[in-house]
Length: 293
Image (cartoon, rainbow, N blue to C red; front, top):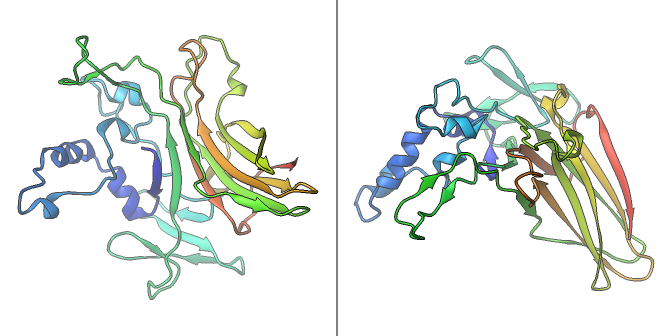
C-alpha cells in the first residue's frame, strides 16, 4: 500500500484485519447502482489484495500460502509515540511540550487524542512506500480479460515528489527535516549490487534562475536495528540559497530504482514521515547534509 496511512489503533486495525482480503473482494463485488451500496462499501483508498501489508508478499500471494506466510508487517507508529503493555492491552503515550510523558486518549474508533476531552487529535499518519510485487500481466493474446499473477516478477520502484516547492530568495537558507523508518527489506540482487548500497533514499532537487541543478541524494537508508523512537531516524538537510538569484527546491522520497532484473532489489518497503517542527525527542542518529546552490 502506497500513500498516507493511519497508524492509530483504529486506523491500523482496519489495515491489518485478518479478513481484509475478503473485505476487498466484497468491495469489488458490490454494484454501485444498488440502494445499499453506500452502506456496504468500505473505503480502502483503491487498495488491492496485493497491496495488503504482508511481510513477504511474494509468498503471501501464492494460492497455497499458509497463515505464517501471510504474516503482516508490524505497525510502524510514529517517532513520537510511546507504546507500553502486552498485545491487546497496550497503552499509548506521547511527550508533551514540556517533555512529560502523557497518556493518549482514544475514541470508539481508535483515534488518538492528546486531551481527555478528545478535541486535539494526535497526528498518527505517515507516508508509506510499499514496493509491492508487480504482478498484473496481460494474457498472451494481449487482452485484459483475465489477470494472471506472476509472483516471480520484481517489485515496482516507488517515489513521491512534493507537490509544492520552496522558493529561497538570494542569500537565504532552508532546513528540511524528515523521519524515516524501513522494515522488512529484502534483496534479490544476484550479487550485482552490494547490499549496503540499497535501501530508501531522499533526493532534493533544485533550480536556480530557472536552470536545473544537480540533484542531492541521501541513499541506502536502512534503519534495521534501531530501537529508539520506534525505529525512526531523523534526517535533516540544510539548503543554502544562491547569492544572486532565487532558488526553487522540492523533495523526492523513493524506494527502489528502475533497472534490469539482475541489478535491482526484488522487494523493499519503507515508511517515511516529514515534519516541519522540532523533534520532541532526540533521535538515535542524525544525518545532516549541507547543500549549496
